[in-house]
Image 1 (cartoon, rainbow, N blue to C red):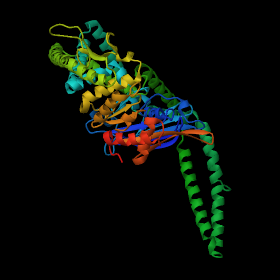
Image 2: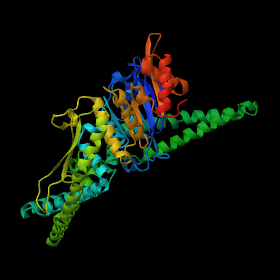
Image 3: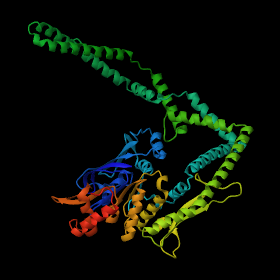
Image 4: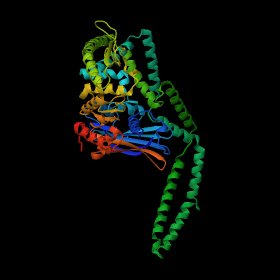
Length: 568
């Protein structure tokens, strides 16, 4: 759930802070006031694409932040955070994203810096945004299967199937390694044995290369280093050097202090300077005396560095071109050698494990297919009934369920089962069903999603739904139905909805008005939470275009009394 959002210098918004509650949050305002700018800022915060022209004119950067409460039941989101070491505070995290005037954006989840794609991945567990912006998951066929599985109540079984699928893939990979031809196996083993032998013979240690490079620099520049130290030590320790002068200065002040006690602090500082410089001199002198140049040692160091460079090129991965990368290759090679030298008995054990996994996968995959096939009709009918009441009178929603080829014992599959699931819709009587992505109207997409979410009700873990264009092309009884469905859905979800219709806005738990003002030649968008008489006036404005029209005010109060929540 989005608890608050803070927007600074985003398009026409200079500085807006808003709080949202559970239930139904509505955003209203005159056409062009900037309602969609606020949704755009939210989309940006959740990992949407960005460009420098989203920064308010005359500013260097735009900043959007928000507090998100993660329900305990949303295990996917909480596991995502746990895997990255992010600890929510009372199940809350702070999202923050900055857009620079060079087009670059930066993002954080609490203190963890994340990429845009990581931010988008995390927030997809928490938010669905429907309308003219990007988070239209319903247009992606890959998202349809999970919706149907939620309706069927088989999501946990699908996770179990995925686990079996990946275990089978790993076992088959191991068997493929075993089934290499004897010549291929021998050649691979010889290569791996040679590589491991070459690496172990080198006796590498992590951090060694950096130490050698430092020593090489010291040896190569020995004469210059020695000469500099000679000059420094002469400057400090010569009879007329700094130490001698500091000592004379100290002795003179020792004579002066009895004559004037205010000089005591200068004597103390002079003594400290004398002893500090003397200590520096002794340390540098000992270091200089320890210096020795061994031509043979320089050659050894350079040969060692050359060997490390050669081994890095041969064995270290491009992502870790270091001694650590070489050692990682050795460890991986040892594991692969172990796999390649498995006995025939191991091969038979693997083959038996694969057979048992295939049986389990076939049995569970068949169960999932049967459940999906059984639920597709009722799910389609339930969604169709709702979208018909939402102004899409002749539309028919359906589920396309196609299974992959197979036999009575085996079948090709993906990590989610044997089926491909896609939602289709026929918008008008007599028209063929088409994928949802072919629907042009953002309002229709929003209403289909509203219908799906209403059918799924409390089963879906996504906690916040945002509807930007849900009232496009509707009014009258249809608008009342849309408002009713949103209100019902808000018992399970947090809803953020932009609307122009009073019959929808009147049902909200939290009403926010977006305003655009021009002052001193500058245009800016602001937002205010409404209550009491101010909300009555806003509903009246939505009804008649005039917030002070008496008839509209009467109608507004009647609507709030009949449909509203917490009306004055």
